[in-house]
Length: 249
Image 1 (cartoon, rainbow, N blue to C red):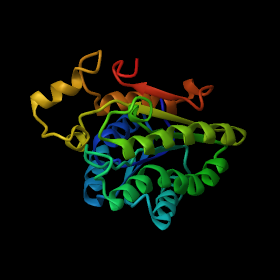
Image 2: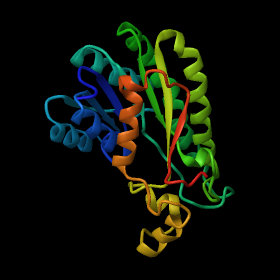
Image 3: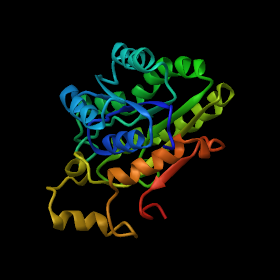
């Protein structure tokens, strides 16, 4: 029960890394808001987690949706201690010259603008609780980019820089800000990252670049998010932890 009494929001919480984080937080005693664009999927996850979880349908690129998401945490559970900015979007692996402007705008809205919007909504609520924790899901793409994902890579580089700057500025408000950099993982966006069909042979090409010999999993990311959220990490802020099996060595 390492998060007993804590209130958390996980964006993109209905699947992939977000679901792994939400499940870990709930297991450790937190009350969790599952925020996702797919409201039905979010509801299924919340029901599976029990009475300590609530689903909110939210588009993290819309200010009104983000405000409502935070308001639900405040009104239903009484505040907010932990915010996980996990919702993400990518273009398919391809030449940087062929990515559409629409996809470019969507990537930066979901991956970057959302952090701005959630900060505006969540920081005042966290301050009322005496502080809090913000965790941003970045990527090894922001540290060691792969070809074919240029505009996505740039968005995750922005997340890492924002994490460090937010940590420096929000420390005075007792809010810690850290990031997690997963390597390519077993999530719904896997085929897009690879730019290839999801076959054992194509997975093997990517796994060969990871020293520990496998992709990341939602449980891997959930465990690191738990560490960054719990009191034992209360002197850690402004870091981007690579959860990558050695990919960035």
